[in-house]
Length: 77
Figure (spheres, rainbow, N blue to C red):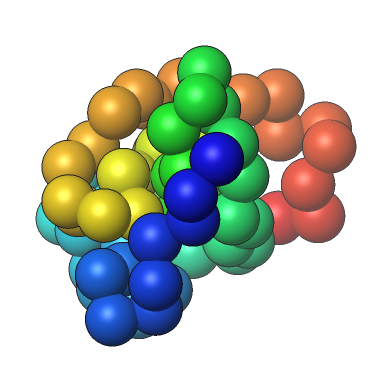
């Protein structure tokens, strides 16, 4: 498997901005993870309503691949 070089990746800051435009709130955690063979940033956002969302962003393209609502009991919000 070939990993993209850093010059081919969006930055964590860019991933946070992309996710925050889709789900307004406070970014509480960011991970780099492999999801179904695709390298993604997992950006976790806490909303004003108390929800926590995981936004998966393609590291190479900056495209949002998935959005899931998480259980807030796993996060200190």
